[in-house]
Image (tube, rainbow, N blue to C red):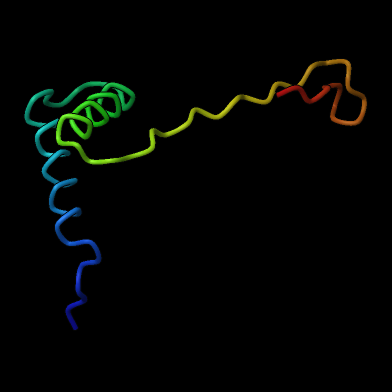
Length: 74
């Protein structure tokens, strides 16, 4: 059973962007480099997107007695 691709035209455009980024940069970079290039290429192709948000890290300080000595900050 073959399923129909949802948003077929957009899917092909996004795959094309990914291929273009890989052709331009090649292998060996960190993920964040490819992500930034992908965002730039999406903008150039006028494909709307929301950039991935970076999570704020949670740090446990040694003074919290409820969690092996750490206070949750984050």
